[in-house]
Amino acid sequence: MKLIEAAQLNSNVKLRVSLQRMFELVTEIEINASPDRVWRVLTDFPAHAEWNPFVQEISGPLSVGAKLTVRVRPPGGRGMTFRPTVRAVTPGSEFRWLGHLLVPGLFDGEHYFRLSPVGNTSTRFVHGERFSGLLVSLARSSLDSGTRAGFEAMNQALKARAESLSP
Image 1 (tube, helix red, strand yellow):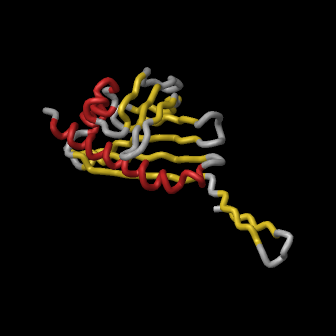
Image 2: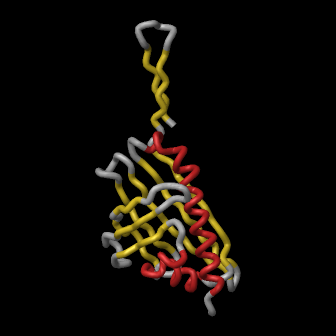
Image 3: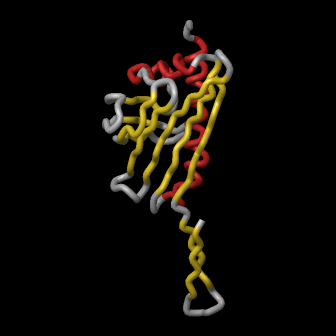
């Protein structure tokens, strides 16, 4: 974290401004289903409205470079729709997108979902986002509370959905 100190007219008074331009939010859960089954649930975009309390809508092609339309709604918060670009698609393993608020560099988020096998029948699901840009420090508390709660709610719902499907 960078810290800037600027002297005011009175040399005894200093202004301290925090310029934290990056923040990463990471959650994870173990799901008693194979990575392939979890992947099928995660990438069945039309079904998100049925089970996902946080990422309520995703539409668009699942291919690197494609633009998606994504609607999220943190618990107790207002919904937001944005158009990120798909950065990575590795079936059964990773899905990432990058979104921006208004212009790149102001408030950017690289959202990721990573799946890895645990034994023969379970999956470790890591759900996170790397936030960067000029406005990150202003949004830090809402990211650490509402957004984290949304990630965790989605993780629990994904677990319930994947574990309820027949193999």
